[in-house]
Image (cartoon, rainbow, N blue to C red; front, top):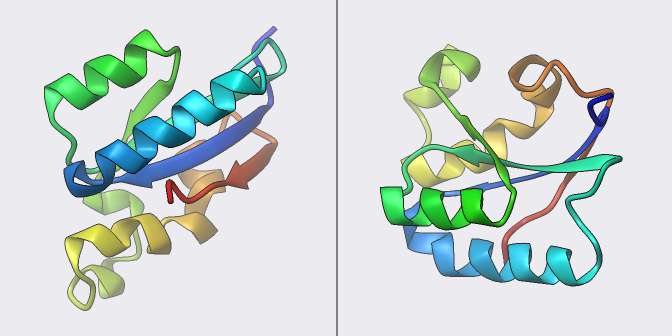
Length: 105
């Protein structure tokens, strides 16, 4: 059975060192595990960062423009996608019943 709960975070490449620190902290506390996935919403990280996350058992989900409210995209900076995607997690990641958003910093 797949976990129905997810810890979710996101960033662009500029904040990837903080995201890696978050992953290492979560690992120390036993996440991900059989009950809770850790999911990274990717909107612009390099292959090396994505490979590192994958090696740490983080589920990587690309965040596409069509998953965000179209009226917002014209008004936000690219790094703000991590902020505006939060109210839409149920649509972006529909296989989960419960989400916990953590900022990488």
